Length: 98
Image (tube, rainbow, N blue to C red; front, side):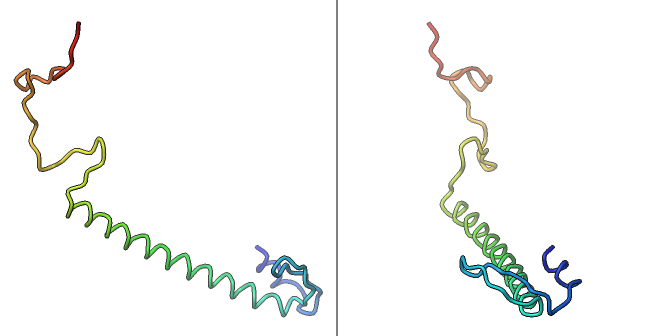
């Protein structure tokens, strides 16, 4: 929004910018290239972080498969339903009621 606004302004106009906690007076023609450069660097950083996130996700999946790690409530597609004390009727299985 700031970059688009500054593009329409006279390049010799006074412009203020916060640099390291200090308010600095510059002209629009000095500030505009720096803002555009920062925006490009942020875009590249976001892309790099997204790629790292995907790589870590794949690494985590491989680790979980290699060590047979399952989350609570996650079904194991390889296992078959076990028969409980009720003979597989789907009863309360081991619940003691008095």
